[in-house]
Image 1 (cartoon, rainbow, N blue to C red):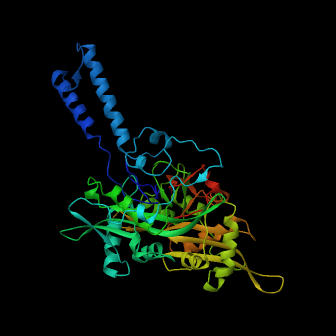
Image 2: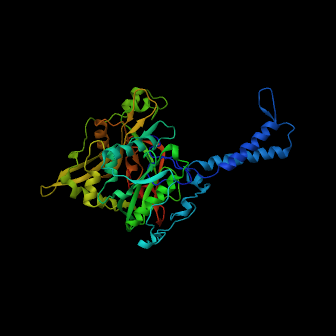
Image 3: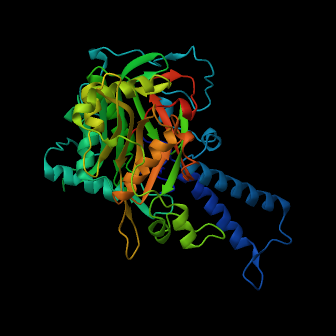
Length: 482
């Protein structure tokens, strides 16, 4: 998916790596005024034989009025959609985010001396006890995703209303078991699975979630919430439900004594601490071209393309095998040591490591390189992992699903990273995946071009809630959210 994590958003924005759009800001009145002005001029202007407006003889003042009206219209159209670049973001008024403890979009943070909360922690008495009010037709519902029927409802809400690419050709398909993996790490709490239902029909129409995490920002370790899966039903995005969802999950997290959060989005909101880019590696080029995920390059035939992306039949690194539960202590230490080189990184406990990396069919897979130490004991020297996130292929007669693997965390010490990742490509190809996606964070730039990844057109912005620190480049970001 060229915009694999891009989201539609507006003034309010989203708290997740991948979200549906939220409600737009209130700029409709200007559009109405412009429409009326243009209608008046159309009636006054004469049309030539081809039906075009004849402006000859029209007073200069009228021409200036039309020009001004068009400029207003263009400005509002530009501001109405989500900002995809910092330049676009500077022109927007963030009605909701300007009320939140986040840096302003134009705030300059160039010194590493600033690494601190924006607001102080609240006492229990300062935190609202009751949920925020929803529009009258809606009610809160804390979702028990251990109930298969409720999990299926959540799956259907996300499958039908969550992220699509800009051309509406692909939509993320979060499998029910993937959702349980993402939403139930060690320390998870049911209260942070926050749903909105229609009162009369009891239909699930909104959702937001959080899970606990320990995150290091530069040299400071902070207990946080990872906020994810903000989704509002497409037909209800004018009801301003999304801002209430964000306030409510903030309240629930605060009630547990946590006052910071980390989240990602494909749009620019106040204010990213870093921006990464998606890259894509074809594993099944014929299918990717058929569903228009990618296209034949100039002067390339299908046969030449298939040859270009051909991979070895099996991994080449000696000792390369699937990660096992008994490997946890060594693999955990290997990754923990590696992550110390980055400025934004998780601090996993061994329980968390087992949860996130122990292989689960069609959800997450991990591999290690095992060697023999000096004393004859088995030593793990390398680690590579990826998770599975397919997309529904929309409007295609043959292909219904695009199987995508996403680079998770990798550590290479005995072989170059490019060789370790080539082995990962081989196993994903052999397991039936169509494409392998990776962000240009951590040390990933070492292998992206060498392994024939193509740069995508989707950026992923990283955000911290209630935290102020200096920006960081992609190669200093060591955090991957699902």
